[in-house]
Length: 342
Image (cartoon, rainbow, N blue to C red; front, side, top):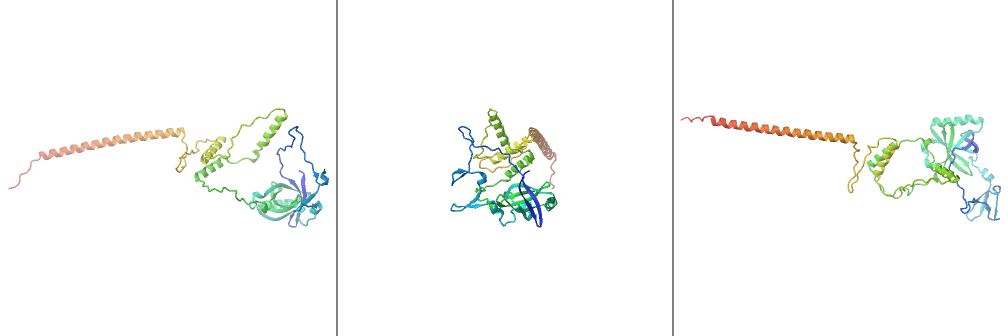
């Protein structure tokens, strides 16, 4: 890989000669501006305003524009002679835990390569020290005409550096969050958790740029004299008022079906106007419904049998009571009354 900057890492009194190379590359498709009438290229020409003529790159330098419009010329020698230690040095100023770095500060990424055999030992020392401490190094460096902030960390066996924005370059998130008070119910959070669990993790290597591939196919078709296939129209979801619970349930169901899982146990919620929504019970399968019907029939049969037994017992008891009453009455009639003593 071609280096874009040569210098050294300053690690206390240790100096490590390094080369800076880009850690990322862009695969985006770039377009040219053309004249719609005849397809001719539209080019920008650099013209001097005072002489009204085009100038070459060798004739172009830097300048700072004052408030009154006057230009102060700035040369590369002026920038190189600035009294700052980071002009050709990545100066490490601190070591901090990685979670102290706000991802919002992350900028471009670079690899730091040891520049020459003598740099191998101190380079390895810094790399292993970063690994063992489980920290990242905060550094200052100058690149492309300005001083920058960087974070050094280990990637495999290489020291990588992420450019960081200065803290005062991060905007505060004012007036960004919804200004309407919203209450999120536990049932909604449960479904959101279920959706997150169902989607699971992803192999980052499997992700690719579908848009770029579609553009490449379209360009190839047009270059061959054909017409690209029209993509199916997609409905825009913007501005629609949705039932959040129904949307979450549908998302969980679709995610499970995509993974080949049974989605029959996804809850269905019936929303009644003016009433508190309750979490619905799981959907019953056909087997469960049949079992429930059988159980209900058995209960009815048992209840009927119990009722018959109770009725028969009542009749028997009543009959026995009536017979006993009649016998008692007959016995009283048959017994002679004793005469009273004189």
